[in-house]
Image (cartoon, rainbow, N blue to C red):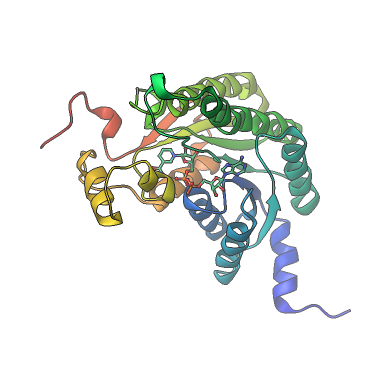
Length: 270
Ligand SMILES: NC(=O)c1ccc[n+]([C@@H]2O[C@H](COP(=O)([O-])OP(=O)(O)OC[C@H]3O[C@@H](n4cnc5c(N)ncnc54)[C@H](O)[C@@H]3O)[C@@H](O)[C@H]2O)c1
């Protein structure tokens, strides 16, 4: 049997380090996947959006990276176990996990919020993150190594009016992160969180006032001390650093990547 150069390269790369990224069909997950592949990791892209997953995979492969996809709802335990087993089958190990899939819900005052919205948001943002931790940790503990990065939000440390379900869910991500970090500090597995501010993705634009994208970006930029929205690459850079051995003594922390939003008491007009 003859192998093409690309097939040989793919087999070789499969032996390298591997990461799983959820919410990888769009936004922060997609760009983190591209960044992780550029850093040399084989990447398993997980999402409910199959079309978006295929696009993300293509973007990684066009840059010479190695990517596989797995369609899964992160709130479903059997499907979570499915993507973890698939990663182990394909790559033999899991070195990094970006536990990132999340939804905003429907912005409204608490008094106007249907309890179904709360349940839906908690199912993805808390149950999904918990299940990812539960099943990925088992693999990493066996290996004696690994780095997990959960996605929180600027809503992880303060209130955000009109998003009670989301804000509650993202506070919970911090509790899960710190607890998982402490439970696993002796095992060689690290667990941290990134807290994105306003990063230019579909989700952020959906939740921002304004009629056009330009108006929304202008509105969101005014809330950032640095004067502009962040990019998905800003988050990806932090995630790839936390995956790396350069972060080997960092566990149990949350890293705001927000242009100064969470540093301020009053909006900054400097
Ligand atoms: N964009 C921002 O400004 C911002 C700010 C703070 C936090 N975040 C967080 O970053 C993460 C990614 O957000 P984004 O901006 O890239 O959003 P996005 O909407 O662009 O992407 C989210 C992805 O998650 C997937 N997803 C949703 N529910 C899922 C489920 N049940 N199972 C599997 N996949 C599912 C979606 O299909 C989508 O591909 C989220 O956790 C979000 O809360 C984003």
